[in-house]
Amino acid sequence: MVGGSRRKRRRRALLKLVGAVHELATLGGRNVTLHEMKNVEHAFPDSSIPALRRWLARVNAAGS
Image 1 (cartoon, rainbow, N blue to C red):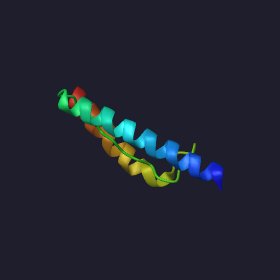
Image 2: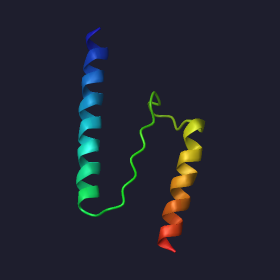
Image 3: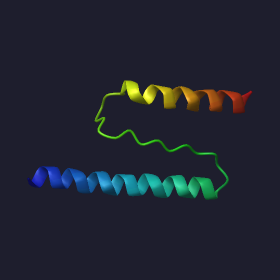
Image 4: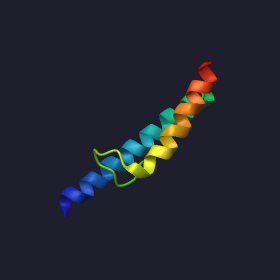
């Protein structure tokens, strides 16, 4: 299964890049939230809505 293996390599590379950006932003004094939504593809899963609401509440409270 060549396509699946290529997809996994691209995903790992992307996650590594996102992790590096998150780390650099944090080291630069930014307040950054990183939340991985596993096995989602293009949909926004109902199971991630509570985490999104908590994040939005934190962001809104910090901006007030």
